[in-house]
Amino acid sequence: MDALKQFEKQQYMNLETVRKNGQVVKTPVWFAQNEETLHVWTFSSAGKIKRIRNNGSVRIAPSTASGEPVGDWVNAQATASTAPEAIQHIEQLMKKKYGFSFMMFNMLGKLRKSKTAVIKITVGAG
Image (cartoon, rainbow, N blue to C red; front, side, top):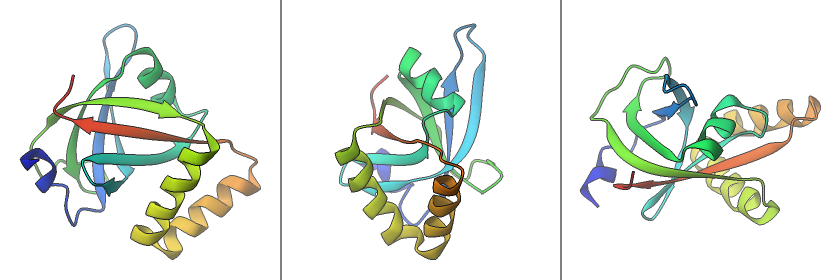
């Protein structure tokens, strides 16, 4: 899928979700690609999880760590999951891509007793 090509070799993407009142929220996130799907690791209490559960239509663009787009915005469909098997799978993808940085981020979350969630993003939908 051509829309995914621009995400190759990128460390961040800007994830645009929509609040119930229609206001858009842009959040730079780490992500991992698995074939035709992009995955985000986050905490289940994050606002983006609530917004995606309410409205799975999102837009994404490769970005800098501060969220400045470095590519084109793409329509996508997102779903959130707290299923242990989904979390375990995405944890392996994130470890492979981000290495020690991800492991430290993950460890800090566990120390805070934060619950984990993953977001699955399918490009071209929405």
